[in-house]
Length: 369
Image (cartoon, rainbow, N blue to C red; front, side, top):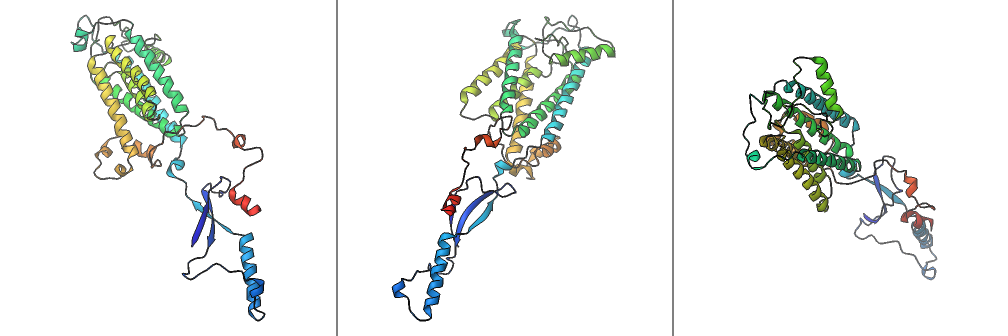
């Protein structure tokens, strides 16, 4: 069989939504097969071959005028078959919100366990020995963090596969705050600097605890909003988590050619992390541990997500992590690397992009002629 292929014009699609290709099929399978020849009237024989000659001419005429086209379905590429599954994104969003709420509750509990700074002075820290405290430095950290969160939100909003990327972000953020809730509870460090004024201890006052939780949530847990006046949430730094996580997602899901964009976001993140220490709001170990856990968890997750051969390999020890069940739930139908493509958040009707006279294919124009 020999086939001449015509490009798909967009109008020839089956009801299933798959792509189709129009081809003209002629039978050349026999080695001695030749196209039908048209006999010249002068060479036609007056005997019994006259009828076969007329049939040959008629058959050739029909082939020229009424060519038949076979519609062949071509399966869509994997990139076009990435399921959105917004309901999974909603479930993971609840996971992140629940861990953020529990972390807020834990901060109010740990605040009552922080030792008095008059009896337990700050622990020695090498960074503090060489860098004096700047009072305004922590405001720079929180402003940089808010800028990165806003930039990442708008970038995520214009991603084509925002549902898949969104549930990855919410899962990692929720898991990181779950780890933070555990570490701050099992080890309560004294305040890193004597300038810190902690909120009074509640001594089991449940109503006061609810008030503080609501205050923290309403202000986003930021000191710049006046909502965070408690101590004890030192190991590890939540500000470092958000500064690092937002930058990693911004860089991962944006074109590699936008190096200037990545450089600006990296500077915002790096300056924010350093200024946490300059403000003496966290110990150096708080920042180091926060960066290490955030970056490794991000890279482990995306290594498993972007390498399909690792998912079912018996030698992949990344599958031993406790959150592998969540991973399978979120990534079960994502069988390829999520491409960095963008689209409008609100779909525009396709009629807006059609030409006034309508579109038609090469195959249709040939057949009409």
